[in-house]
Every structure is written in structure tokens, then in C-alpha cells.
Length: 102
Image 1 (cartoon, rainbow, N blue to C red):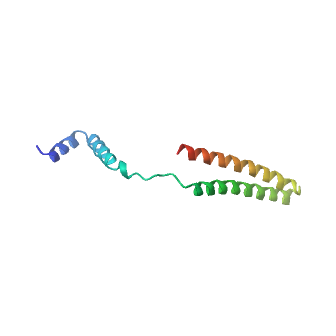
Image 2 (cartoon, rainbow, N blue to C red; image 1 turned 60 degrees about the vertical axis):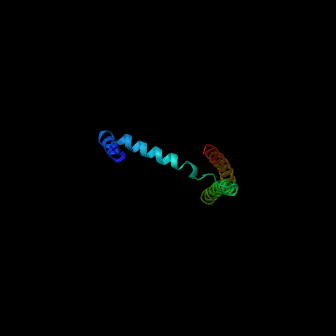
């Protein structure tokens, strides 16, 4: 009996087992060709900087709006900057943890 006939008979009995065998064979063939997914240090640094600066700018913007409509100049901007700074630090910590976990 040929190999092809044996596979077709197995496929008739349990096609998932045949698929699993083929998938494992393909994975074992491609182990040497895996692409490394880590990013460079420059890319990681730019990601952290953009996360932080975006949070600070959003906090400053909302603080400025609060000053403009409530009339609490300069306290709204200061509070917005402080909250933006805190949010930026939290974002950078979260991004760093995600980077460490892969």
C-alpha cells in the first residue's frame, strides 16, 4: 500500500489527526526560519517617548480648556499637566511590562 493511500484512509477516519500531523511536520521544517520579533532599542525608546508626551499634551489640553471655560487660570493647566504626567508614567510602565512579556 502506498503512502498516499494510507493518508487518504487516515483522512477518512479522522481528518483532524492528519491535519495535526501535517502541521507538526511543517512546524518542524520551519524552526530554523523563525523571524525574531524583538524591536530595536531606538524603536522602543521612541514608543515610550510618544506614549509619555501624548499623555502630557492631552492633560495640558484639558487643563487649558478647564482654565478657559471655568476661569481658574493657571490652576487648571497645572492640574492637567500633573495628571498628564501621571498618566504618561503609567503608560510607559504598562508598555515596558508588555515589552518584557513579549
